[in-house]
Image 1 (tube, rainbow, N blue to C red):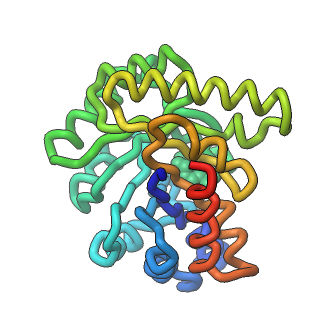
Image 2 (image 1 turned 60 degrees about the horizontal axis):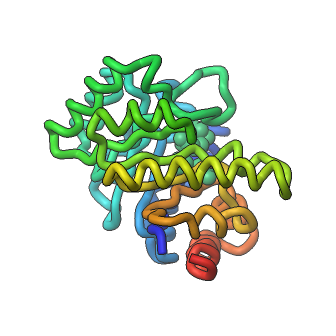
Length: 240
Ligand SMILES: CC(=O)[C@@H](O)[C@H](O)COP(=O)(O)O
Ligand SMILES: NCC(=O)COP(=O)(O)O
């Protein structure tokens, strides 16, 4: 069964609505661990719209499972990863105007900057991962950089209409996953996964890690975070 990384950005989004102190993503991480999270994922955006540097600093001290930090390839952001030393850094694209991450990082368009970011992380002993679309050219370019893992952006799959549209997207994920696994790179997936669409992605061959935030945090409003995490773990387990 794949590991579950719980993304707690969305707790910080609520806090930042009033720029106050609650709800605290640090508490959320601890409760997610009680619910069975195998990892905690945070995205420290350049515009600091949700997760703050303070969160990263405290979470590095308190998180007992894998801490996965999502970052842009900007050298100043990578420097923060080197300072706080999460277990894993997943390099993602960022557009300040976007509401959420719209696609994967384009390694082919930013090859030298991505290679430099990966090399800095590797030299520091931090696992480097790339967040990519299910595009063979991008995946091959990513594999060439010698990363530990590639996380497939599942947004297109999640947004596709149930039925043949979604089947097409699932098939693209399946082929991309096979390419990644054949290269000996760990397969991760995430973005837009929820309690209804996660099973098919969890069941993909060699799926090692799923990063899920929005649907878990949304459900937690009604059932509590510990239970929401546990229910997602159950969903992943059932068909895997
Ligand atoms: C890269 C990614 O998919 C996640 O970070 C997730 O979407 C939450 O962060 P944002 O909502 O800021 O994109
Ligand atoms: N990398 C994807 C992630 O961390 C969670 O995305 P979402 O479930 O919040 O859409």
